[in-house]
View 1 (cartoon, one colour):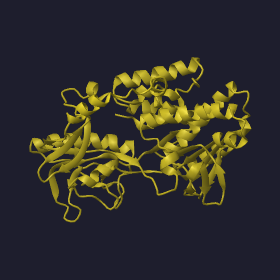
View 2 (cartoon, helix red, strand yellow):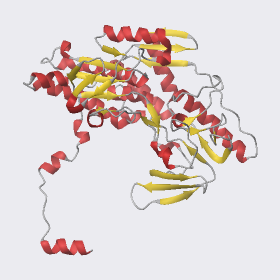
View 3 (tube, one colour):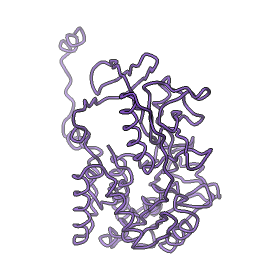
View 4 (cartoon, helix red, strand yellow):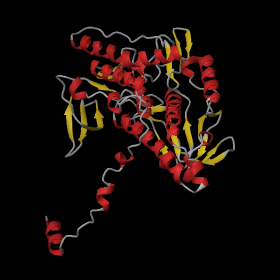
Length: 411
């Protein structure tokens, strides 16, 4: 399980990437873990089709099903996005982002081509929500620390560009704290393009709706999420945006009649759950709701099995906290606005309290403590993404004799 709020910290090297994920086999005792992909859910038959990592697909029967595949990056049909875009939904993407950015510094430091140098030092982030702002701020800190070891590079050559389609950033912490964040980022040299959207990034050329065009080799896409596409392969009722339709009890229900589908439950980013504290609205796709919904859902399943009545999920959104790099943050919690170092402490305290397992809490705290006394690691491990390249270069392919090819084909 990936604790996604820690992905920017993992990308920045503040914590070990392994400490942002929780091993299911160790934590989910008395559970059978199936490593594979759900290809279909037929609730009418109460069966799930599973494609394991290796081997043939098979079906599993169930009494109750919790459909919680979460969300994926919400992308748009923008030329070049699939070729150069980097998401930030998985630990693999966080590791890749760090290695990629540090690799761009290496390229810029040695290339004789001025255009390549400029493109390597342009870092574009699309999306002004939690993920985009925290990732940009953390990676700007990483680059700032790394530049101490690159005498060939002038810090003034490095450009971080934030592209946001609306006219505000961090809406989760309110307009005042969002405006404060914008001022802080601008003071740090971030080029804020609010009310602007990405038109194209084909062949590494960034084209924006404000008419600007420039080359860049880094594009981080954090412009929102959408429900997992796996939900389309189910017979469960879905809302207009692809979410599983739920009652406040977290039971899956028919979108027209409201009739409960016995034994079907959902929660988290993929669920359309009425927000009882905001009549007419839906619970936002945030960890704040998902964690609390999970507890209510688990209790409700027990109640239903024992013949009791499920309870409704009710939680008023209390605000949000965001890190803006080392020792910097913003927070708007229970109506209280905090900024700077105190907000950064609140940000870290909240998230370390929410990551599952005592083991991970201790490891994250240990990472942060070591970072107080040791310098940030600024080494890229780019070979992680191409681990066999060096071996294959020195190992030429060997052709089988013709008769053995025929024999192998006959089998």
